[in-house]
Image 1: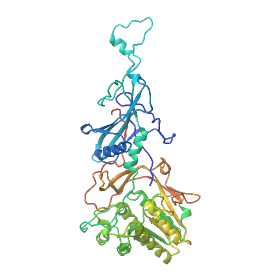
Image 2: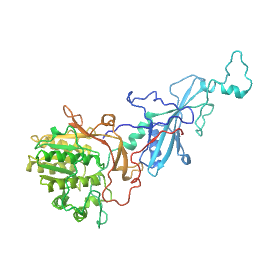
Image 3: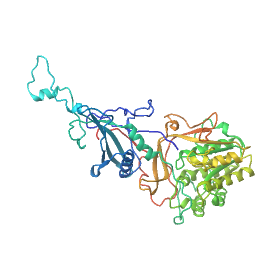
Image 4: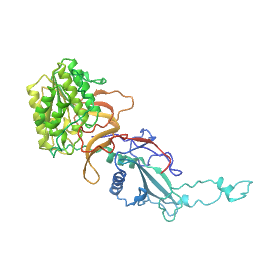
Length: 491
């Protein structure tokens, strides 16, 4: 999916680094100038390696001072000028580690001008004699600020630096705007012996009421019998399951028969049904996690997050209170690509045909829920497009998710092409950026968008929700997710 840029700036760097946009910046002119550094949720070496790749793709030679966590590129001359009036530019990168998986990267465009180098003439002061060199230096016309430690260019004595936002935009895109991986199949870990999940109360004499959470504005038009609502990414967060819980509560208040469809292997349907019929105590939860290998995979993505499990528990509570609520596992555990889309669609279509009046809410990845073909593969037909075609009498509404920058638990390829499942920062694109103070709400479009979305669901600032069962505690479990820090004054 697409995400928003959010960058941090240093207010002054060793002297005269100015806060101006690049002359060739093609970004939005009305973008607000950041005042905080962005803390990337990746190790420093990975962030610097990614930055190196960005430069190399632009055909720069990149040199590294590993012990200083610095990069600098070869120089180029924008345009062609006569000797004595030439300007050369290069990039300088300074990295800093904030934590084991938290890093700050600052990119500067350095400019070397021959005219600045040649300014050596002392000004002539009227009716005043310069008593000594110290007095003169205190009143000189041109201050000379340099970046300490940056390799000099032969023949140049001055260098001016500018924080380069467009290049930092590219780095942010590589680190925080990458698609999540959904890992189908795979090995499982050892069976669960005991588990404790926040929100479960074994001492309760009876099932507590569902925790519906705050209201979601604008959801009313979607709550109609026989309609299907598809919610896309980001899974692996607390916010999307919380909004889904609220939608379920609003639907049962309208006396609708409700089905919650989750991206779990259909072979786990029996285990889900058993849990929904149970009292939801510790042993019931352990039985669900032992019987279903989905929660115990070696590589777990956002589909098996703790927030998703709590969503299932809220559905169980609504059902225990007498509401008509079903939880449906509709995913595949053996195929991928188009075959997986076909199997997911087959499962939902079969349920819809058997239950034409049920209000169906399905959570899946962004690409899956689109109701139009994707632009990058003419042969790929998403789940949403298949449902729309197969169920003309059952309206299908797909919602893309807008949010404020935060964190997500997901699986991604790192710079070394290895699968890494952990907490990552996630940024939205300008159109999906949620402004501070905006409530959770649904905003429907006049018609389907180019990607096949019928509206936008605003969920607020994202907070990662790790898997219920993990091989090891993530290194960032007790750190500030998707951090920011005030812009400092050192490079």
